[in-house]
Image 1 (cartoon, helix red, strand yellow):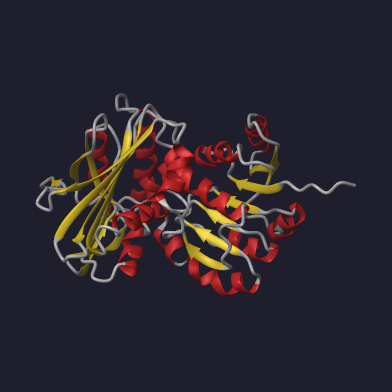
Image 2 (cartoon, rainbow, N blue to C red):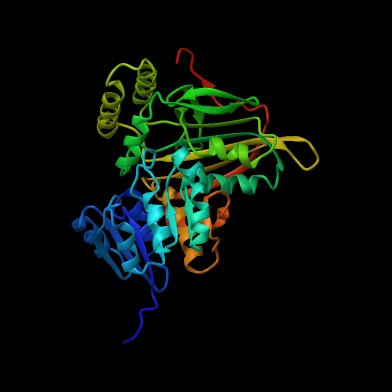
Length: 385
């Protein structure tokens, strides 16, 4: 019998918005067998049938009591966990990978999930297995951008990250639901050298991205970078993240809902989350263009103050490919043996920006980096919210 030398990669949640895109990105990797897995075997098989590489669909529950045994029987070279939302998940999938000695990547952007992931390190090291959390826009791509900018600004004082997704796109329902359920929830954020309490939906403000994305309205939200940036950059004084939805009336309404959620009215949060999800899916108008902006203030090697700004735009509905790219890039490195560090870590500066952007070469995605005036306003904040 001839042994199958192909690499076997299982994508859990592989027929979802991001999992299916990761599968398509990886489908050109030589010698790869993809396993698309999730609760719905029909959807998994349908997704697998559309891929140009050897692929199969499989029903697999992330909460299965015998998950480790199932993974071990599949003889995997890598598992990519895309079955979100991650904000309320535990680490059972990663722990099953430790038991099965299967390398693991996830696309989590929940702050506690990603920032506490290192607690699995001792068990992963003992099993000689690599586990990486957060291989998505945040913190994988954002940290790659900061890595590049830090070559110009070795002393970083402030980091602002803004994401303005398009409205007319295929939606990741788990991601959207998690965002609305978070409205009103408090979290700490570093501002002017001190930690202050804010909440999801606070500090309504407008930002300006490049054409054709243009002006957008955003609010504070909790992400891993708000904790990972202060860990990485000594002397950091401020770190802020904002995101929002389109059109503007919908974003203004959600900011108001966040303030109502702070009143802790019984059953208010679930009701607001369901209402917001329905409105976002059905609200007319909006744009198929979205983008991300990272602005960094700091000092050059000569001690001079300077500011740099990086942007990425996803045009014509191609924005959802951007969160899929870091996981695909890291998967290639693991499969090719270019990254193998036993333990458990966040995906913080594990990738070069060019490695991520190469995954997007066939998409309607453009990027630019420029030096900006330190006096240029970061964002205009609306009064009253």
